[in-house]
Image (cartoon, rainbow, N blue to C red):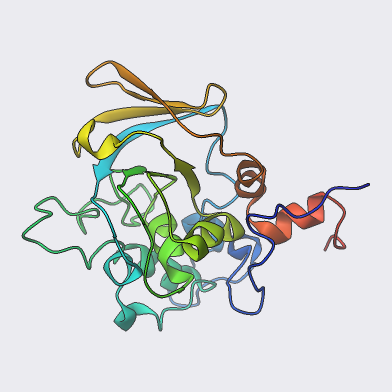
Length: 234
């Protein structure tokens, strides 16, 4: 038997989700930006480790907090709008609880694109609950996010992470929101299935990411299917 689409993502409807955006050849007429300039889908990691500062959030972070509905008019397949979507990632978090913002408009890369300092999010229970909007993982990914480590996820958000190729959704058996603080340096080790708090020197095991990892590596479910021979290549 040949390869099959992983069960954790195969139920995502391709008619409802923006997939494989970075394969688009579209160029913004106003800025000259190409999707490859703003989108890292399919290029989220080059080895077995993703390292960087973490952004810590609590339980029941819903999609309205990740990306409020007023920004859903932005079209992720348009380079300029994809980049703009990233500037609003996690903007719905309450200021009283989150003094540090996930993304600072003054933080730009060498191409002048706003990017977060925090490629890794550490979350509590039920991350991504609420509406099933696919813009939620896309916004985090567009901001420069690569990994979310949560105690549990809303089912559709988890699927959207891998189907879009935007985020590696790791799960943890421990309550890591009590082991990390925003700004701590972390190292996610894909081979050994663990995360190290480099700031404190403590290591924590993660649940296996399983067949979701290769889908994100490929750049989303469509590209994974193409590479696996399940659908015709372009």
